[in-house]
Image (tube, rainbow over all chains, first blue to last red; front, side, top):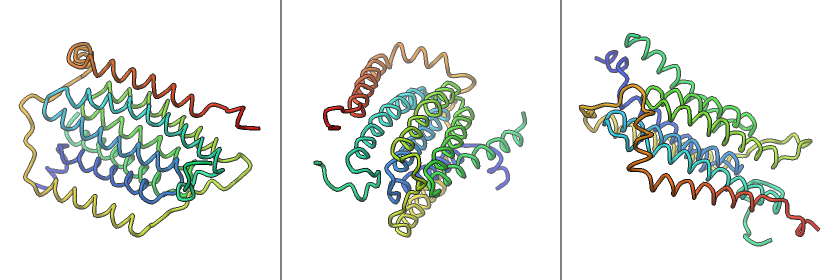
Length: 107
Length: 171
């Protein structure tokens, strides 16, 4: 019974990986101080969401999840570009990327 | 390929993905995190192939590994002066963070595994998905496709504007 469940790859396997990736991404966003590592955590969260979309799309037979995951990838690229520009500006202003020491919005 | 081979390959890629993601999060060195993210993205792309979304897998490799990861590495190198050896990233609230993460993962897994079993639809996606993506993009998803292209253009112009070298402020 258990070996059969382990051998036939189904929805639960992909959901488990997705949950672990999401948890690790949340951990990075919550606890890391470096802004770039926080961005990496956000990318992990987006990847976890993509795995969920594709899993339900495959086992439901529709194309909605596949299309949405494409849009998620495009928006992740846009988000990474803008966020890194902001991080570089933060570094220019504060000479650090430690988000806990960035506490003013004006120079 | 029989079921056993497929399961073994799946577990190998799952292990690569999860372990390298854990290394991204727990590594103290930002450069190590960035390079470990490479393996995470490749592992996730392999999982996409298992979900019969081959086009998404190739897009993942091209966009994430070729674009976002290079961008992140440039970010790391821009925000650390080269001679400065301290590429460390401190950790804030370690114990509450681990507690919340474990509760999150445990709670969701408990919900997944105890709330009955999933019922797959009668028509599952099989084989390549490229042709249907083309059809859907040019029919039902025409407007979102155009909108996302404008969003990308605006975001990239905005990023270039934000990150440009400001000569007036430098003096």
